[in-house]
Length: 257
Image (cartoon, rainbow, N blue to C red; front, side, top):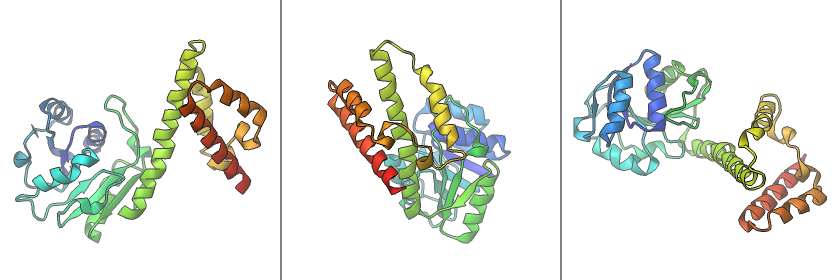
């Protein structure tokens, strides 16, 4: 397929590479900053532009992969002389209807992306949505060229998918950051000592449900251990509160079993 990539950030960079390596033609890259547009376009062997009025008029799919806050304004600026073209955005938490094109949809690869970290797109689930059935099938066909797992999901339910991803990724990583701070401040212990524990915890989830894999003092409600932990956090009341809230939530989930 012929694809125009609107954006050159973390997601756009990874998605563009995946589509390019799958044999699709990236017709053009747009970014408001020349450096990022030029860098990605050189990888994808295509021209670039920093002006919305110079974005090409025709392609099989226009993929808008920009920050949520910029999505609606940017999409509106692209509407001139592009009637009948299919525009999709890649935002997990945004409705399909943030785009006002007649042919509009969503192409959401659910993963955390960094420009300098290559990912295996074949294991990334992709979620698609479109106004009409033909475009849904087109997006599914496109997604299956880079991913082994493709779902059709409407905007309302995709909001909850994105929320669940925040718990699994962003909140979990914040806990890793808090752990790293504790290790550094108390013994200057390198964070990589935690990696086998993290890997084993995540690995268990391939065969167990999260509730089944839960361990630790909060599951047993071992107040002897928990009170000692809380005392150690007395100088950081915000982190102490996080410990208390998470421990209570873990125990309440355990009581449901």
